[in-house]
Amino acid sequence: MVARTFLVRHDDSTFTVDYDTDDGFEVFQFQLFSLTSIPPDEQKIVGEDNNRIVSDDSDLAALSEKLQLVSITSEEARKPEKQEETTSSTAGAGNFDAGTSVMSDEELARMLQVYF
Image (cartoon, rainbow, N blue to C red; front, side, top):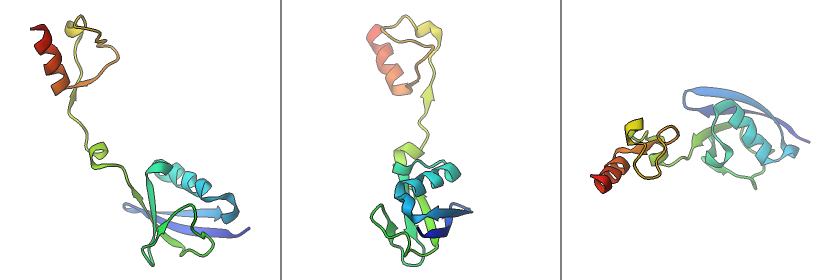
């Protein structure tokens, strides 16, 4: 058991994370998730001293205490799509349920072309 304290920088914040290296990398990722709301599968953790990417096969006992967390979500996921909620006046068109669906302008235009 090796207890470590990491200083993890994300955006403009720095988090202190106490971690037992015997717990495994996944536990460390979930600790970061609880602090930053970045899911483990979207995390990229980099050692600030040597720019080395930290992964599940990294020796966390030998790492620098200063780490940086970066979200690796795709650019498309970061950009909010322009979506328009349709009103109940289009609810009769096809199998569309206006109460539960949201569609893009392009999808709405295609659907309207079929009926008009």
